[in-house]
Length: 138
Length: 138
DNA sequence: TTCTTGACTTAGACAATGTCCAATGTAGGA
DNA sequence: TCCTACATTGGACATTGTCTAAGTCAAGAA
Image 1 (cartoon, rainbow over the protein chains, first blue to last red):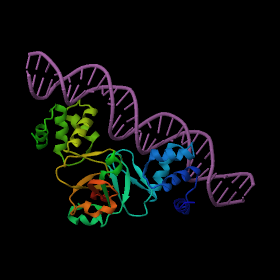
Image 2 (spheres, rainbow over the protein chains, first blue to last red):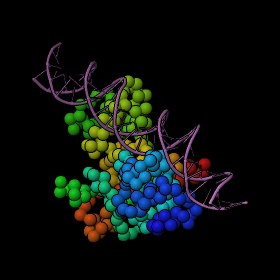
Image 3 (tube, each protein chain N blue to C red):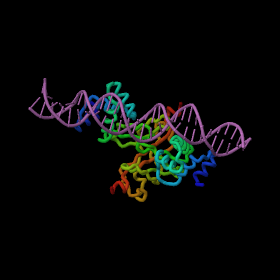
Image 4 (cartoon, each protein chain N blue to C red):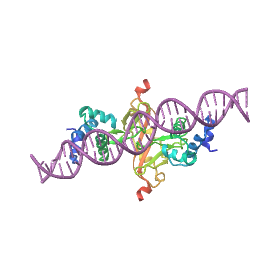
């Protein structure tokens, strides 16, 4: 059993076949899939899995902090299973691919109190945009 | 005529009543509206304006760089008319309100060559998330 | 092992946002 | 004023996500 599944079981999750395949799809790769892509890959192993189940499962994984929801372009959200290590994202403006990166420094440091307007700030995300090598070549 | 309309005319834009009201809605306020909100406000002045026209006009304003598209939550994109001055965004996790902020330092500086994976990086956006004073009080 | 139960899954309707197209209208130049 | 290329319209369609009622099943109890 993968680390992810083990952690889920430790949390008292009811482990169904559907949740297992969703967790495995996320755990198995380091690409960030959309909900639809997760569904397609899960359905390859468990054909009768419903779209709603994939959405439910992803939402729960997000709410317990095992997965991060990434919304870079206003289209489908993507799901990032690498929630346990702080990181930022590098997005290809052409194909939408997302890659994890680890910049130095704390982005919160750049925002002085005078620029916080009474907000209680909990975190900062940095999104780098550019063109990936594949799109640059094509 | 507002600065925005003037710049658009300088670019050879065909100035129709519809484009005028869309530009005026964006120019008049410093809130970041969704396409639907822009449409509602434009329709208040020009009732017969079509949704498609608002989308078309917003897309063009984005493509010529007069307006920035902001996608913070995977729901509706918001349109930020303040494209001429570099800034970042502070988002309320509860109500979705967006506020412009001006942090110090260049976010690109934190990403060394070894973390760029062959991408040609064009820019970096920082999104600060937290709770706004209104939501904290409520 | 079998039973029980509440949580999980399903299918499909529905909602929100955005895109596309053919028909019609019009801004701005000749 | 008239033309015509470009803009607008309205509505169908696409994509992504949410909700609900009814059926199903994992896991603890006996």
